[in-house]
Amino acid sequence: MAALLLGLLLFAMQSPPIPSRPMADGGPPSPPTASPTDNGTTSHPNGTLQQLPQILIIGVRKGGTRALIEMLSLHSAVAAAQNEVHFFDWESHFQKGLPWYLSQMPYAFPDQLTVEKTPAYFTSSKVPKRIHQMNPDIKLLLILRDPTERVLSDYTQVFYNRLQKHKRYQPIESVLVKDGEINLGYKALNRSLYYVHMQNWLHYFPLDSIHVVDGDELIRDPFPEMKKVERFLKLEPQINASNFYFNKTKGFYCLRDHGRERCLHDSKGRAHPHVAPAILQKLYQFFHEPNKKFFELEDDRAKYQGRLQFMTHILPSFCAVGNAHCCSARLIKTDDLL
Ligand SMILES: *[C@@H]1O[C@H](CO)[C@@H](O)[C@H](O)[C@H]1NC(C)=O
Ligand SMILES: *[C@@H]1O[C@H](CO)[C@@H](O)[C@H](O)[C@H]1NC(C)=O
Ligand SMILES: *[C@@H]1O[C@H](CO)[C@@H](O)[C@H](O)[C@H]1NC(C)=O
Ligand SMILES: *[C@@H]1O[C@H](CO)[C@@H](O)[C@H](O)[C@H]1NC(C)=O
Ligand SMILES: *[C@@H]1O[C@H](CO)[C@@H](O)[C@H](O)[C@H]1NC(C)=O
Image (cartoon, rainbow, N blue to C red):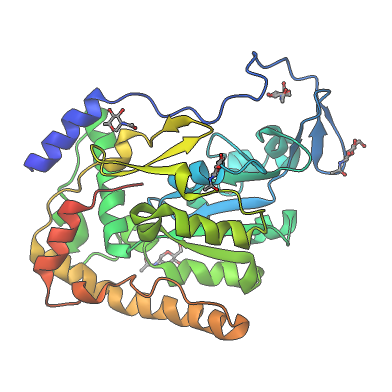
């Protein structure tokens, strides 16, 4: 609980989210005189245009999507939407149609690729079909973390939001466990059943349209993961090690973009609540089977494409059942990065 309170203090003191890259001309945005065309773009007299995204970061919630899009926008050939648009998952947005979606996109130069991220896409079963209808060749990025840590991270975020709004919250033990068993009705738990959601996507998209980013690795050492992303997107290699520097105070990497330094919002480093080791152990054990199923999906993909496997550590062997001590140590050290 002490860690939690400390986290809360930090939360109260923190600054607003980092701004994304400045506008190229540095001046105020001119009024939108843009004209929609029928080829999925809206062009502007200054040579930029709005285009439907060619890349989507589909999730997972608390997987590291913000870090990923910030790191991706280090690349000069990428234009990133600032906000989570929630077009394909929110009915009220989807009803507005593609012209509205287009209007939410950043102005990009014609040789840039546009990327949008909405982490809720991954776990919404109606979304894959809708995206496929827009563009069956779109490139999808999915960033995943250890499912147990993701659940705790999910809980932590909701917990802080409720605390801020002076709403009641349930202690973590009581949402995770019901009648002595893992509570399958807990939505955050379901979001960590990666194989369940992944199947929906594989129904519509070929295996090689989806690249899985290892969220645990991205935080530990972002550069190698970003190189893989560049390769998948067929971008000219541009992001390099000097784009990242480790901030000891924060305990994670910050970005250096043309001499400008920026770090993720402090809410990205909150401590997880303490969870009784017995419950943690139960959680790790619970995810063993779903993880295996996910690997099997991934395994097929590796066979199919002869591609390198990823994330063999999603259930780290040193955190296997029976070693609860290690798990809790790991959880106290690693914060909820994203
Ligand atoms: C071009 O115009 C758009 C729309 O006003 C603006 O958002 C963008 O920053 C401008 N880009 C450049 C490079 O001038
Ligand atoms: C879309 O159409 C507009 C106007 O017809 C044109 O200027 C623009 O180059 C086209 N963009 C693409 C990507 O084809
Ligand atoms: C998890 O969510 C999926 C998709 O929404 C749903 O089909 C499934 O029944 C849920 N599983 C459980 C155990 O609640
Ligand atoms: C890394 O990229 C920056 C520009 O983003 C460039 O100035 C620098 O020379 C590059 N460093 C290396 C080692 O390639
Ligand atoms: C490192 O993080 C601390 C704490 O958030 C912040 O005050 C400081 O400005 C950061 N330093 C750099 C060089 O990013």
